[in-house]
Image 1 (cartoon, one colour):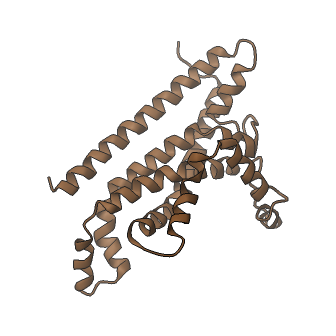
Image 2 (cartoon, one colour; image 1 turned 30 degrees about the vertical axis):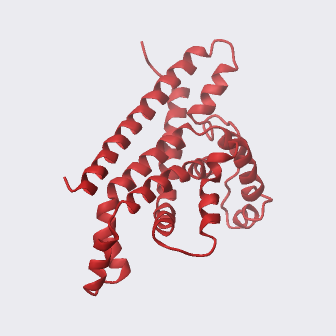
Length: 230
């Protein structure tokens, strides 16, 4: 019978919490950067594009180590944050930060593609009627790219659920605090008799990932139909 133990449920619940917060935190800057890369021309645009996609190229352990150096309690950002009571290293919030950074490129890419698919003439028509840029974005662009935003968010959520290398390097593998699904699977495989628990969590991971991919595909098709005018 497929039944998760309390420890396994704890890992699943923590992973969902981490992935949700990682996605929500990454969404506002993801939309802004995607719009900037799709619509604006500015010095350093290619550098920004490279930095956004850097987590996809670097080994996840390198990203996690850079986060530890930067946001650790002695890091240039982590030390001032600690003074006001905000700590990321070896906390679930740090796992969310690492997962969000690793998922950020997928989110930005999906949103950017949806923005580039919007005919700029539609935005220009709104501007000629006297609407401000912000109002044009809110009333014209945003409704058109909403499926892309949802697709990017879902992909980011799935990626955050499966993040391992950067997370375990930055926040370690502490049961009940930072032990997400991937790190729990790894931990179970290191102890005798843990294969059954690892397999159950693998099934849960595959189910969540497949559901996210199917939802993303459905939304992508909606984008294509909307652009085609069908």
